[in-house]
Length: 324
Ligand SMILES: Nc1nc2c(c(=O)[nH]1)N[C@H]1C(S)=C(S)[C@@H](COP(=O)(O)O)O[C@H]1N2
Ligand SMILES: [Mo]
Image (cartoon, rainbow, N blue to C red):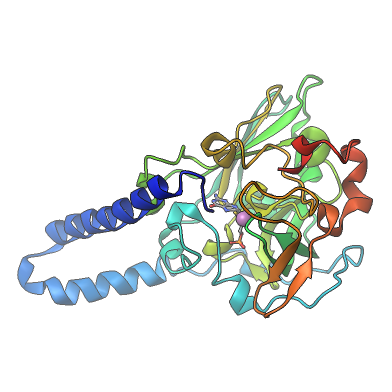
């Protein structure tokens, strides 16, 4: 994403990322062997980074799952190769081309801890959770705040199913989602200008709305790492930054959570961030969107076209608080 103090952040991103890569490389070489083998080792290291943990995903046998016909599209699906090579995942860099870097993230073992204001706080192993949940496929549009969009078939389960399992206390009003923190594999997390880890939040009414979806797969397969494996959100009525990837902790709370983007630039990225073409971003229009993988620009729709599901959550369409 592009931030107001553009110059400052840009310098930081370009200066710090290569430096941390360089540092890791030096550590690797020092630990592994003498300088004589350096060229061969560099080649191996590059290959290992591209492959990451090459063990097959243990959830592969669960997919594909039955598509839920309630969620229909008004446009073609984005090609898999486009949706999985054009990504936002700042943990792995500020460009859209992070899919190779993301392969360094270990995704097993992986647990999701649910804590805070719930009767049944617990830590779920991802594979046990996947077996316990009613998996389905949903085709959803996705609208990034940067004004590009895609349409993809997610697999996963309704977030409400998880909320029910942990029994929220009466006073719980919000869910706070926290992404993994591991700067050894995610070089972006060494950039001190971002308030890591990635945090996002929802109200409990939003989290239990039918549309709020936990995505664990895409295109009939487990999620690839760059898409947020093994556990991410898909909230199609909100700007894409609300759909946190690589989640490891969910905390129920009575305080509105402060997201990473909101903490960084609160005048541009708010808590609700519902899609609305009538409210421009301070630095660009939200009127239309570039459809990923095609040359098309199409008009943006209020709530990204999902008003029938969610409009009742936001009584005042003129309240800008709901739309940035
Ligand atoms: N942890 C984490 N989650 C994240 C982001 C991120 O940088 N880190 N980027 C967000 C943004 S801005 C968008 S548009 C979507 C992109 O998801 P995709 O790369 O699967 O298309 O992820 C969201 N979730
Ligand atoms: Mo985004």
